[in-house]
Image (tube, rainbow, N blue to C red; front, side):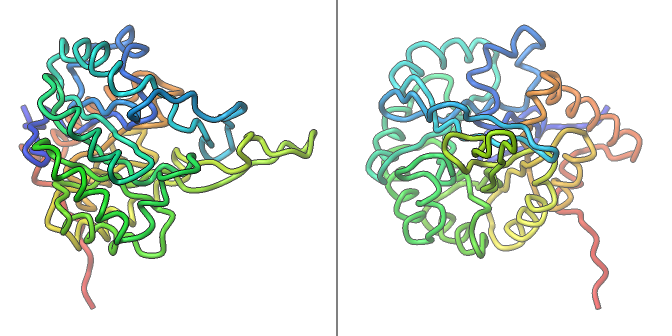
Length: 306
């Protein structure tokens, strides 16, 4: 029997497979399909200080290569989540990571303070990479100084581990990763979605009301894999990899590239059992390769020098 457990910035995961924020809600839609305690961790959808309605529809469009979305952080606000969602999720005994979003660094700090010490919250994912909001979001994640300011603000207000979610829509993601590490991040997660668009040829209008949105799914996997490899070589904190993971072999690739844990996102939309199948497939892959501990494959990519 292989050991699937990993340590993510002080949070023990029974296996390295998490859900990706924005693709899992608060888990209620998925608990009819499987026991949520099977997961390594649950990352809930992004929350803000106040409730948000999100962007106007249409805000989801399928493309031949992936899913395009512009949901715009629709959520019920932090107070509701603390009162109604976190206690419910805590019943499953799975680490809960809360994705937080703000219009300013002060809002990130306030959210971190509100969630500090809340029973059932294992860590925070600081989202400085959402491409679908007009204020904040990806803006923070494309400038090292702004990214650093947000992380410092959150760091001052919580003892919880901070996982900073990075945007691929930058020239050099390593600069951003190093900036947030120096500011106090305990881990980084990448990638968020790539900016894209789709056009309805019948109406000659954009498929999304916001015109552009974030592309996720298998189409972004090669980009995500490259960035995880680059960042994992440049920082001394754990990396969470995500972007098009739908099979166990996808998870293995991300871990070989340097990821300590991985997250399943869009794949859960067409197969609600996707994350569980990745866990089961990962265990079978390790057994087949006669590897006793999943940690042995982290950063195990072999590159011929010269």
